[in-house]
Image 1 (tube, chains in turn blue, red):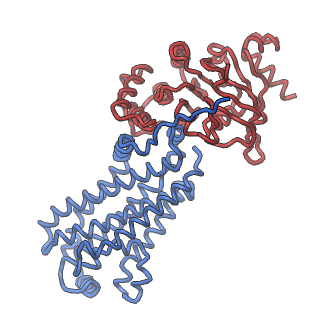
Image 2 (image 1 turned 30 degrees about the vertical axis):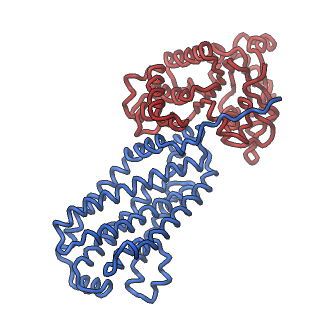
Image 3 (image 1 turned 90 degrees about the vertical axis):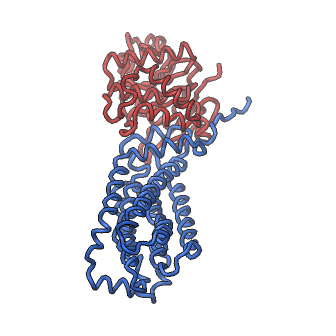
Length: 269
Length: 245
């Protein structure tokens, strides 16, 4: 009896068409549109927050980040009070439902009976979530660049841009971690709760090394500490100083993606 | 004739629950095969094993000459599947969804779009092609579900309760489509249903499951004659009652 020859179509994950359609699907989701409104809100709220900063906050920021540059206060408000929180919300909204939300609404079986492995489907879903997350963040930064140049005294476009290119890895990390929680826990609500707890703990500790330099080395392992490196190096900021944190964050995210893909193999529709 | 699908001594246990117990039957190329049994009889479990979604506890399964436990993607690339219980992605349109499914079979964009357009016409979705799937009626949604099973022009169609929830006209249209596919393209269909009149309308050969066990397999007419049943309902009830004794 002759051995049957498998007729597997070439790996669809290598198809730009599939990625393009997947990204389109992701961008049409209500939660993506809702997040876009939140980012827009951050753009509008940041200058308002800076109108009358309390003197004690100004003094604290000056002592933490050095110098008396008002741009330091702006970057602290923008990065920590606005974008760090949005990073967590974006990550949980985009990542905590990966595969498990579709399993709960019974649409997963339609995709899992096609020639794509569960791990491949996981990579596709997380990949589109990461692209949408990064897109939302970077578009917000671009609009902010134009808006804040006109609104904020002493605004430094280059420092703002470099800082954003590091901090964009914060929502990407949040997305990858939430997706990992989704396939590890198997339920969207549980994954969202665990992700929120872990991510807000990390956000809360992001600047602890700045507040108390004695803890800086220990807290360097916090991905959010690395992602705010652009703010903590405002005085000596360049692409060179921020390469380390970016490389570290890329490796961390790829590791989370690989673990999640491995766990996704257990998912049955 | 080499079967397009064969199941030999298939058992599937979920802990203490025996979903399938030593089931053996085969499906020939080009036929519309009836896979009957009440809810919970094990039909869906068998289809999941055939697609490589879950491994069998014991036994051997071959689909299009491939072992789904070893080459699930090879099987899925040549098979079309319509699940019994599913939901369409609410925020996509029929057109974008079918195009997406085409891309999952590695079709280039223009080919996926052309295939989606052809299927929209084939299943009668032209007026609804650009509506969000979340707003479609049950009948229309089932047409989209059927169309997604045909995207890869499959050699073998596995349909799990495809007429469930459809009105008489929808049922008639779907059954006619299956007949046409078999006649014009030689597509083999394994048709799982607990609506026995549908099976009687379409299928020459059937397998009947009851509580995970195969209680009959063969030509429907011969089975009816053997058990003195005038139709499939009577045949099924006779066999089910015999098993319950």
